[in-house]
Length: 233
Image (cartoon, rainbow, N blue to C red; front, side, top):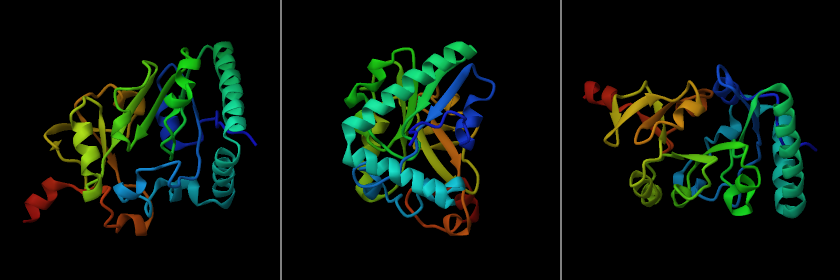
């Protein structure tokens, strides 16, 4: 079983790499209480991106589940294999003239800095979204994080911590994007995560994606465009 996807088949990964000098490897695992510990407080489990796009394919579901099981059952073996794959990926990028980058938390929230992965590969640029505000500002220089917002009451302590940093805050909007949110200017975040990482003190707006059930969801991680609500009122 291979852990990394290096062909950029994920749409968001591919869009981020387009027009950049980077080639991006990604890791997709099935989230749970350990792999994504803040998902319950953020109220994003039901409508998680695990169920979006290619995530509805049984083969993809099985592969992600197998990787998560591997993480839980043999963490040392998982980390050893991950490091070997990253080493080969970086070597391949050098041959092709690309800069190596990796998003290891495509739909998870593992603190890779705790396991020393970013420090082990200083030539590798790493980035992720996180719902764990305590991670912000505590990763090595080659590992950048964006905070993932939710209006869930149990999650507001994390939101307040994130707002005290300059980290970009990603918000999923329904009904278009407002100009400002949380007293920060809003940018279109659907173009490139590599650009979003540079958007300090800004809101990275993401369009709500998915089928009918997600579009109609009342999950707290989905924000109805407040400017449209104001006009409707």
